Image 1 (cartoon, rainbow over the protein chains, first blue to last red):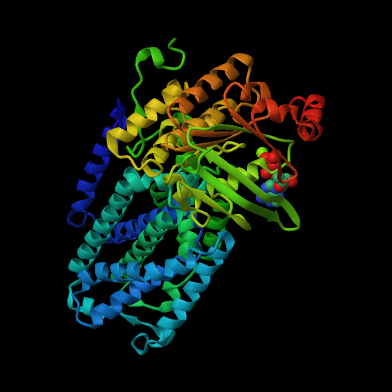
Image 2 (image 1 turned 135 degrees about the vertical axis):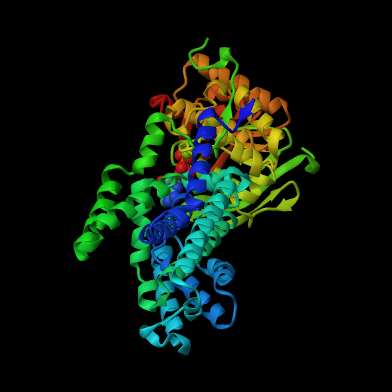
Length: 332
Length: 248
Ligand SMILES: Nc1ncnc2c1ncn2[C@@H]1O[C@H](COP(=O)(O)OP(=O)(O)O)[C@@H](O)[C@H]1O
Ligand SMILES: [Mg+2]
């Protein structure tokens, strides 16, 4: 009587699986430049999805997610320096930052709205300063993931690509399972109306904690992956607020509070960057203007808009009640 | 009534918004399987009292005991899990979710049910409230009357012991009001205590066995509907003005 999969969502899931199979063999097929760019795209998808998890579902607007991006990269540097093999160190770095987010969330989640947003920015600035205190980093001069020098460029390119693809699949998969499960209904209820959610028994703070930690862990993994592809670590580049600006752009353009929206937003961002990235400052101004226009005129984002207009639900995170024909609206 | 029949006691409740005292020293008790109507002019503090009982607002003074436990310091989610459910005077649907999903949140968290049991509770609740045909509609597409009905259905899906209703009957036709009375009677018949704030007194008296009238943050009358409606203070504070503006 209650269905989760529709024919359309099954077809959509099949298409995603097919696309992933094609992407998985990428490094054998694509030109090196394409492989590198796609690695960047996977990182963008992670970033967009994580900011959306936080703001779109948790109602937590943060302008300091670069804190976790930078800490993820820094933790990977430290772990690798301590002798942990490079690629495992990326995942371990993300988990460590996720652990750090537990106590941090206890403090930050007590703040409301604008206080939380600005508070997170302060956290990012603090994290930046603290990382600069580490002698290994050489201040703003930075350092690099030296261990990767031992690997040949093609092998490094392919391994980083697969790590990014795998990281993206695992994080989006985790988010999908979360939304589909018990926490998911609560998270979506909080997204729509926090007070009403509490009135039907949703533990708002506990649910936000889950989202906060997931977003921290995801952004940290993105930072560590970015390090593996860039190799150099200059604190200023990683702790830059521009990362959060990108996340906001992807989420607003794609559709805040929809699962698919930020993925679409990341692909659009990737295309725009590829075409206009060389224009420097004007490119950034254009991005900002586009995000603003979307917020004003397409507040639901591209995907959110399509979802409303055509009652689209590609991923089966919802529920459909199969009603007897006589009970259908207008059916008598 | 003997004490073991008491479901909820609120004593000495005070609530201020800055300089404005909205509730002053309110005592209010609900017994098992009781249906109580709350009336009073706009701004009397009825909604605020309901917010304080459900935990949406913390009281500044007083104590709330529910089924023998002091719940004064528990938040709204915890009180709901213990059996206090409420509807909102201005509906607060989960706009981006379907009607069925709106209820499912409450069945899972408020009632603590899983899988098929949660589905069954939602469908049963929708059916009782006459909303099953709307199960797959996104809540944001509903009109005001259906949103109010959704408030009732969603509160019911949390499996309450005490149901607090805030003006769910406004704007109904006579036939719709009669249907609503039927629904509340079924709920009450299941042993769920009901506290119902409503301006339409002739609808209210078809369900409730006790009536409370509030004015300016105080309880000014509490007793059988007949006694309360004939009380001089009630006529003065409420019924006089209600007759002058029947829809306010
Ligand atoms: N959140 C709030 N902030 C400030 N004043 C409020 C708030 N909620 C209610 N009030 C005020 O408290 C008084 C009682 O309101 P309310 O409880 O909604 O009355 P009723 O439901 O009986 O019409 C009104 O004067 C109202 O303006
Ligand atoms: Mg009111």
